[in-house]
Amino acid sequence: MRAADGGDLLARLNRASERQRRPQPEGAPDGPTPRRAACWWSPPELISLAGTAAWEGMDEAARRRLSFWETVAFFSLNVHNERRLVTGVLERRGRIEDPEVGAYLDHFAREEQEHTALFEAFCTRHAGGTFPDRALAFPEAAGRLDPDAGDLLFFGRVLLFEDLVDRFNVACALDARLPEAVRDVHRRHHRDEARHLLFGKEMLRRLWSAHHPRLSEATRAALAGQLRGFLLAAWRDLFSVDAYRAVGLERPLEVRRAALASPAAADRFRWATTRCLGFFAELGLPCGPTSPEGAS
Ligand SMILES: [Fe+2]
Ligand SMILES: [Fe+2]
Image (cartoon, rainbow, N blue to C red; front, side):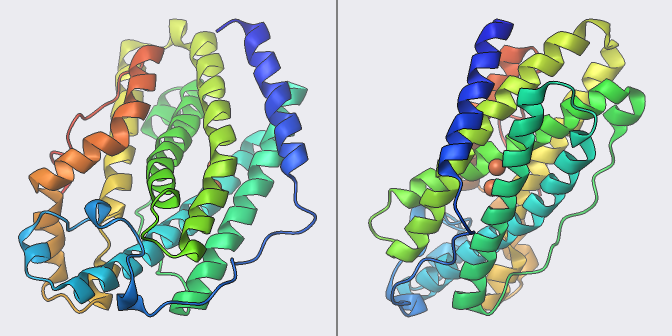
């Protein structure tokens, strides 16, 4: 992409975020709260245990309750990751010289704070709160090797996480089996994330073309390894022990291990990640596991 195209894109994204700006953060969507076992809260085909022995042992009511608690886990994961993301954006904001990029990062941080409020409001209203943050701190090995690689690593992680989440947001927003209150959260998130994904790709194109010629092979390999590790960790986070416990499954850690190793999960992993990994390969930074092997 030529620089002029990227400049146009950023100007358009800034205008779109400005138009979209709400006078005050939106609250949780209204509407009656269905009983947990009365409906699907996420598409059953996308539930982490679908296709596993544990799933076969559950009746429809238990599967629906699991879809509820996995939705709470998914929104909780977004809350925790968005907080980290906003911290990283604000840390970088002062160093950004391009005014269009700086202006967009301001929109980006504000929109993430609104998403966090939206997800938290849903979890509080329907489940009494979010699940705790279970993520382990991620070392920034590539960043230590080279400071420019640190920005590539940060924006690379952001894109991997946002694209993974967006695959689920779109599928849930379109699924008529889900309550409108749930579809609306997914829809609202996708509306902003569609812009964040375009921005993230543009940032990575710029950073890569500015820095990659002088990155050593060792730094490139460290960067790809860190991105791969981050994606696998984000994928594992979708298999929530908190959700399994909430629905009363016995030996939830074993259930999780078996689910992560299942062929059904490998299929879902490919569905969820192929699009984004294709972008990284095209960029010149292939970082894909094509299956979640070793993710357990
Ligand atoms: Fe978000
Ligand atoms: Fe985002």
